[in-house]
Image (cartoon, rainbow, N blue to C red; front, side, top):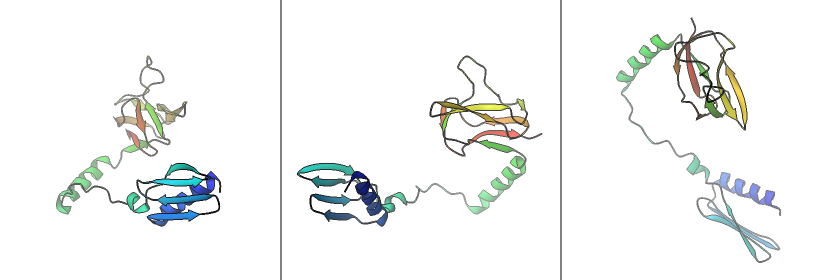
Length: 166
């Protein structure tokens, strides 16, 4: 049994929801406990420690409850937002990385709030794995908001800019 087989076994046990699995073969003894306990593997008198993935029940824990407005209060806010923001377009990050507003520290920012942009204009760069990817505008219009601070990490599909296409 090689390390890949052991890793696959650990993943299988974690997905199954079992709390503990013991496997004994000719020269190897494996005990897998899901949760915070490590996995023990004994092979020819040596003991190796591997950490099992948490059980799916832990991964599927519901998010912490936050205060919720009553439906009567929530509806007007949505309507106001829809009336005011229907025409605005949000530019989202196509990749995970670090967001930069300028090409170099001594250079000016690509865009500022209030700037008029054209389709294809560079809005920012996102560094991913030492590569700087230029993020271009998909629309022409005016920059209404810049939603991310310079040199901040961004996730895939995270809103970066709000554009008024006029």
